[in-house]
Image (cartoon, rainbow, N blue to C red):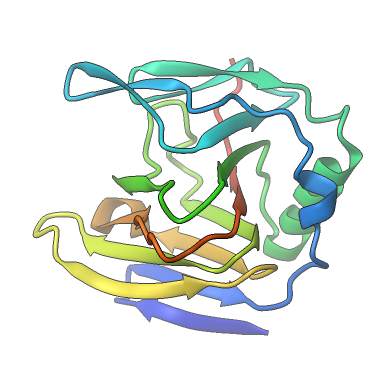
Length: 194
């Protein structure tokens, strides 16, 4: 059942709890890049998580000054099924999955919006599902940088950002040093085909 978490009229964040079975044991062995480099404010630094991009329709995903080369989605049946289930549920046409692995609470992703040029600007929906330990999903006002909401993203919960969400807000997974377990998230987007 759909549960609204945030709605300002133009931007929405909502969830479907228990969207899927716990796939953690099936996905933890997917090969990812270990803390790959990105460019932030003109300087190269390491991402504080392991990352992989999977798509059969796009060669790569460009963000933060680097390109994450696409791995074949069709070679991993569990990812194909997950993509199909998310697309069917949301009546969407996502064609890529970005996987982020946070091995403990010291691994994180800073405040950002999913608004890169390689994403389809007409498709104003991004979805995510995570497995492993719950982590805080923090939302900030994009202009003031003030925290709007700290939401605990529980395992197997489909989280959906739509409307003007990427224009109005940033989102992040902050450092939580007390968290000892691992989290793997799957973010679904529609990438422009090149």
